[in-house]
Image 1 (cartoon, rainbow, N blue to C red):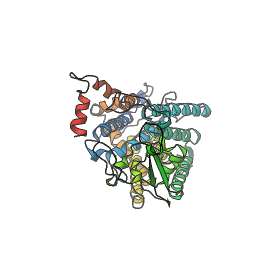
Image 2 (tube, rainbow, N blue to C red; image 1 turned 60 degrees about the horizontal axis):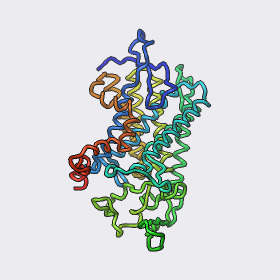
Image 3 (cartoon, one colour; image 1 turned 180 degrees about the horizontal axis):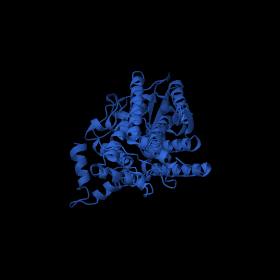
Image 4 (cartoon, rainbow, N blue to C red; image 1 turned 60 degrees about the vertical axis):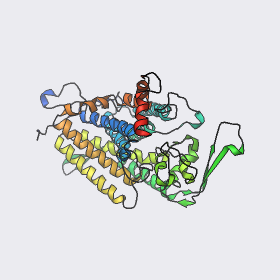
Length: 432
């Protein structure tokens, strides 16, 4: 095994965003003053997240086994969001390990989060119409409010504020200085209690969803009303969970994700073209946002867990110590998550506590493996593509999410605009 040497950090890049972090890597005391380098494994991990996102987005319809699970369970796609959040938490720990002005840092965090949130609304609010259409534009009365970047923005702001206002406290015990993150764990406990209280405690009455069938003048015959019967409390199904009720009351049903993944359940009998027949249960026709308000609470907890991984990276100076502590933390999370899964289903759409624990632990194991491969053994040539993607993650995310790359590819055709490589792939593999 490679010699275990310290990976020292001497400063945080306070003026940089969480995806553009740099920190010094010192292999010996003789190079303590060398220019700061990035944590390569963190870039690789971020790049892996972006790669997995592209893989499941474009190949998920061809290979359903890697696409999102319709409701309960885990597929490859269901690990992507927690991985992003853990990476964001680790980055926050590096950036805000030393804060000279808390108020100024807070304003910077809020401003960055707002920019990221608004960018997410622009990219995933319905402005772009997908890879099969070259049109764009959205009715602001139906714009989707929440999405991937919005969730990352929420997790980032919560984790950053925890790090700024509740930093690690130094404790003296058994003759050795230690650090305690007690207040940050109190925030985790508070968010978890609020989440569980609302998820299981709120009463969900019967509700209805009204759809205008066409663009002709408004008459009673032009509307279809879907009545969903609930009158329950603590239900974790797609129709009557309190997470959906909160989003419908606060955001409005027209501002939710119009094609939720639970439409792929057998009960909905969705066609190969993505149409839900009228004979399907009423809830199969209704919108639901998997990145909604209530599940954002536990998503923020994931980001705080990533923050704890970042603390280990900063506070411990040797590879062996870091890997050992990360593994202990990850095994503990996995064990607790599997124990909770006995009574609480693994559900990405609701971001249940069992899902939070299992996916966060999986992110920890992945980070350990990448850290050992890249930073301990120095095998960066094997992961240079992922590292490059990680350094330009936001740009690549924008290009992929807005379908700019796909639109550019569609611009090259043979004789007819419809005769392009994108449509050929869709007709040959997706809608065959």
